[in-house]
Amino acid sequence: MEKAATPRASDIAYDKIRQFVLSGRAEPGEQLTEEQLARISGVSRTPVREAVRRLENELLIVRSDSKRLFVADWTAGDIDEMFVLRGMLEGHAASRAARNITSRQIEELGQISDLLDAAVHANPPDVAEFLAQNRRFHDIILDAARSPRLSAMLPMLVEQPVVRRTAAQYRTDELVQSAREHRELITAFAARDSHWARAVMTSHIRRAFHVFSSTAMRRSEQVQAND
Amino acid sequence: MEKAATPRASDIAYDKIRQFVLSGRAEPGEQLTEEQLARISGVSRTPVREAVRRLENELLIVRSDSKRLFVADWTAGDIDEMFVLRGMLEGHAASRAARNITSRQIEELGQISDLLDAAVHANPPDVAEFLAQNRRFHDIILDAARSPRLSAMLPMLVEQPVVRRTAAQYRTDELVQSAREHRELITAFAARDSHWARAVMTSHIRRAFHVFSSTAMRRSEQVQAND
DNA sequence: CTTGACGGTATTGTATACAAATGTCTATCG
DNA sequence: CGATAGACATTTGTATACAATACCGTCAAG
Picture 1: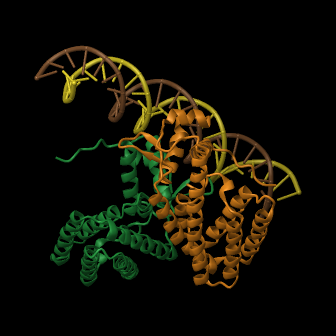
Picture 2: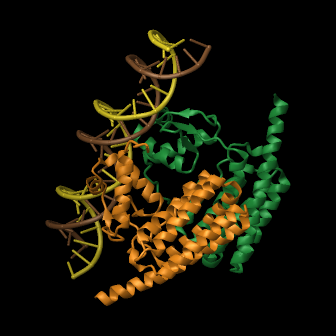
Picture 3: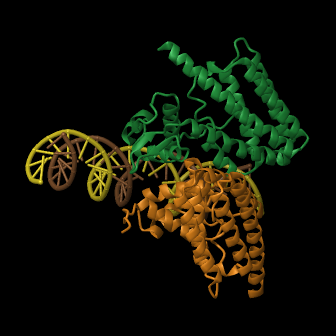
């Protein structure tokens, strides 16, 4: 049985606020007060402050000239930049992982890959499941990289603008290709080929960026159509 | 006249604790209690906690399995990894800076470069001044890169193991070479050549790593001699 | 001698009260 | 009419008290 870790109020606050921001219930640029966030997360301001510090560090929340909190708002340039950094860092993580990964972990990646395939080929494709397993996949690689520093830095980059859009925007062929790349990564890991792993990961992330861009466009077209 | 910003207690705590850790007054692996840190920095536990969160994020302080604080302790592998990441990120920063830097900023870099030369050629070389100006130099580049994300991530990597050793460990020829690379960076910026800038910066950081390794060795030899 | 349970102590986590500071509105003056 | 100063409201920052949790030594049983 899994351990039922004690829920720390500051973690609760972190999750709730994060979800509040990413779900789009808070508009980009909107002001947030600590008290409001305390109400939302059901704890006092003290743990909220800690949570806010973390989110601020992830640039999900920004502080105005002096100390007032706002929901971050992303330019296209920010997002591009973010994917570039993710490409570098995840590429590096993959490279390290190829050297350090255990066969147990490779097995695990294989199982996740099966789940990814299942999610893709479901009818209709189960995109939420796909994203969840995709995240697990990348987390294992990060773990295998054995770099506390990478583990601290990557969360600042992952899935920030991704979550906001609805899952329905993905096309099946994109998911298929993504799943294929995961398989290739596993092969590279099994071969302990760090250069291969880095290259596959880098292009994987970069392609994700273009998928993101095009789905963002699709979405805005859809929004226009709804107006 | 420059603004005399209000000193926030949490910033005071951050500076004091950081200095406490980096100066070597705290042994790596040693436990730190919030109350002790509060005494040291002269504020209450609340701002200390915020400061600790930041330092924890920079991996200068680590949390034991549950919640007790310890001074981080670095393996050779950690330091190597850190310089690799710095190389990637500062290289990327230089690349962006080459595209975005203003002529005003290039001038500023030139002035700092003069100060670097002066510090190197003083007799004896003024290493503290060199390090201070070096830091200003890199900060300007980071600023010119215009990426809030890089600005958030790089502080996690800079000068952590560097400060602990005494300045006297540097050799003059190393400082001369470093100053030369700064000049070359300026040239690359002036030419707006992002590839050149990235390459120079990458090798600059990588060379710094090897200088660091050798000075660390020199230092340990010296310590052995003193035993 | 080892192991495990118990309880005291040290340390971290949270809430609340209050202080400092920032923003905003209004009234008055140029 | 616009600008500015001052009072008021809102928001963030800090300290303290208390609660919850983890650690560690002790003691008893196997």
